[in-house]
Image (cartoon, rainbow, N blue to C red; front, side, top):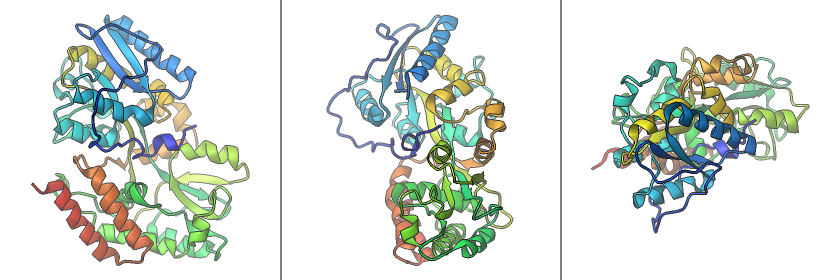
Length: 417
């Protein structure tokens, strides 16, 4: 269903220190238009994964044009090249009116004054009902209390488990550790795949911290908090699970698919992979285990759609944003982009709600937490938290001391003048 590479949360988050030597030229899609102005807008989107999906997006744009007397010039750009070309276009003032934007880039673009603040549009006569969006996805567009985009699609991670090894999935951390000890067979069966390393590990870590009753930053996002008690307990949980998950097993090819691991945390892109490539694998999906008495939480991933401050046609640009993210079109856009719809009502469609696996991801999405809306959070994620987790889980360093030092460094990066 979903290509894992496509939705690795940080794969598309290109550092914003790219040397901008000139303006890249977007690869034109099937639609074209004249110069911007009046009721003409330029829209940049990721290159869809198939001709069928491109035709579907073109059809939606045609519908918007005809209903609103607007001309939309659409450019489709490969996702791996998107951020580089977008940054180059912004540097020379040739950016589009509307574009996709990876969630963690919204704070930086907002701070730089690149994005149009959308509160007056969202709350005006041609506005939206903010309560109809999944909270986690919507919040990725809110910076310092102001709205700078809308969620276009969303995804999250949950717990995959091998039903032959674990008939009943663990609901709490204690259940998970007890299960780990029970299923473990040295060099043969491991309890948990692990969080990996680097930015991916750091992106998964908040699911553990929040499910332990903590947070990555405080409520007003003025101080990092991941090194406090809940974060330390989350890191110690990982070490407890790793004790029953030999590295040789975890690192073996397709370990979960080949039945060597009891549990794995990943996204819905894995479902078809397991069904198609490992037909004998008897797997299920469950909510991420949490500390006793704490709700299960996860992380939000996906893309937003934004309007740029220098747009000559902000009303028409906002109209396209609202149109593509509406409940009427949310499912179609989710199909085109390979993710879940962002509208609560759209997510009730039987294709999601009645599927035994997808329905769990939707339930997990209700408590999926947005990354901190801080300009340098990606740097903290990759260079600080990712490194600290490697030191704790791979090098055996003390969790409290290591996360405490990492938290201090994060505060220096995020909040020092």
